[in-house]
Length: 176
Image 1: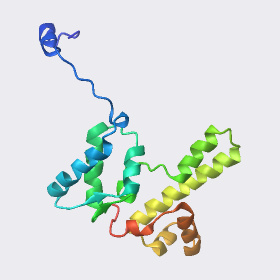
Image 2 (image 1 turned 90 degrees about the vertical axis):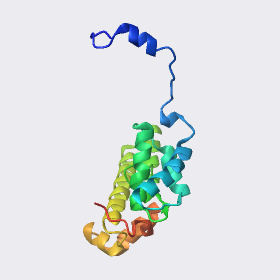
Image 3 (image 1 turned 180 degrees about the horizontal axis):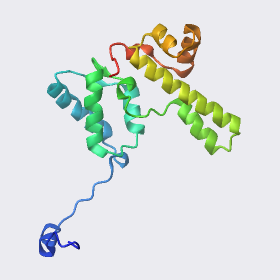
Image 4 (image 1 turned 30 degrees about the horizontal axis):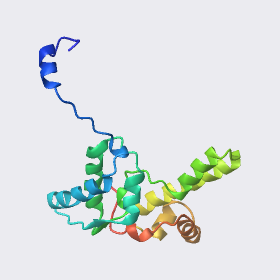
């Protein structure tokens, strides 16, 4: 209107009633929307996916959703392409998972932790992220993942156990 590209009288005719929607992160229907998108996207993509696991639901609920409902819809569509029957956190790899290491890093920074404690938490987070990415790349093959990470199998196995990573969820979903 100020730039002269929209007539003032038309603006006031259209601005009779406004609806303000809160951002998705402030709403309580994230899982409802995700479950609505599930069958729609499954039919469109020809990939039936029955449900979202509890762990994946927690990831969806913790995410900030800067792209609002469109981002949620796209995340569900991508997860359906990666999942076979149930969407797991590994299928939501575009969403940064707030892992125990991430939580520890946040707590360490907030609790006036020492520089060493903050560094240890950051290292744990970086290790977990790297392991998840390589397991996705290798479709859950731990021997191949250990080779790519240039570490021995036993060390990788211990790290996977330490961080609570389920290598099985990466089987059958090659990263592109």
